[in-house]
View 1 (cartoon, rainbow, N blue to C red):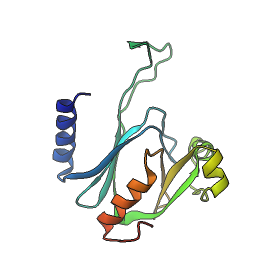
View 2: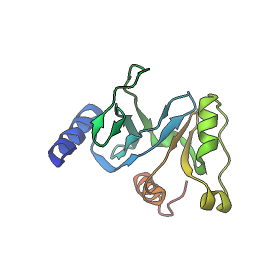
View 3: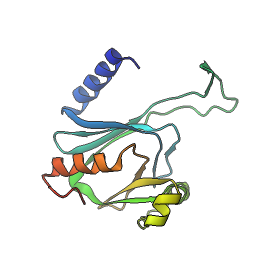
View 4: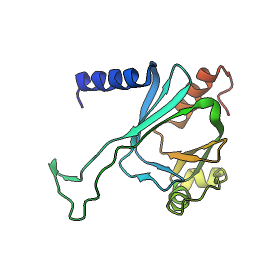
Length: 161
């Protein structure tokens, strides 16, 4: 995506949400406890009116820049969601494998936070648990940057939820 396409993409999202986008990133992996898992990631952002917004993209497999047509291609359905940040109950780093297993089973039980050992030796993702017990899992490029932006939006100074 070139810079003009990126600007148009951001402007389109801002128009549809009716709010300006502040912090934004790409999460290379996404899952939730309704059973949705996106191996190719999602666009993720925080809006100035207090929402966490994300949406996925259709991405076909490629080899050396050539798009491959999968044999058993499942029809792609765009997935997007806006979450009011006041609905967020907890945010933890959890083991990615456990998150994938939990989401595949459509479990509504949130995972416990990964300890220092797990964070050091295993891939981890950010679990966002809502008051409704819905859980969302993002493989963030910078968890700390996300927490800082979220804390600023909430008007907090310590960077923790």
